[in-house]
Image 1 (spheres, rainbow, N blue to C red):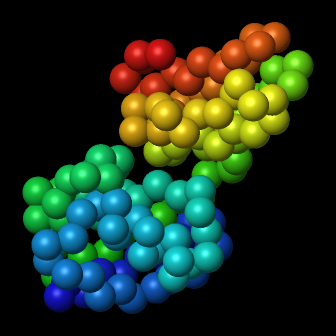
Image 2 (cartoon, rainbow, N blue to C red):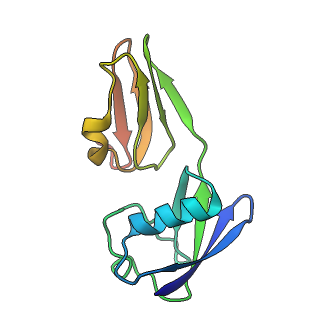
Image 3 (cartoon, rainbow, N blue to C red):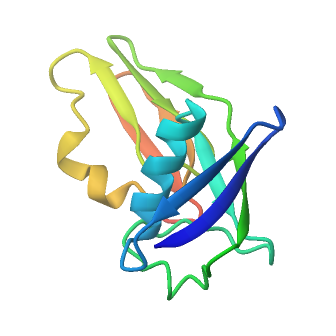
Length: 134
């Protein structure tokens, strides 16, 4: 088991976490969200590396026993069409949509990693990712 300390900004709350060495960044993010009670967050290592690939093993991300991570809490953002809404935060790994039944984003959630912006037209949403792709 790895022992990792996560400090949340700007609140300063911290949590000491135990996580299996075989866990992924996504596992660590979920554990951090549950421990800190915050859902819109990004994890950054003490070396400044953004942990934004949820399927990356902790060892491959360079996480070692005793490391200290920073959890940056993001502000939720909202976009709207005429009949639906989309909620996300910059750098987040997903978009939540609701409203008109044609605006369900569940089929493309696996493609929504590193969302920087969501643009809305009258009837549709487009997510702009951190690598510039849409």
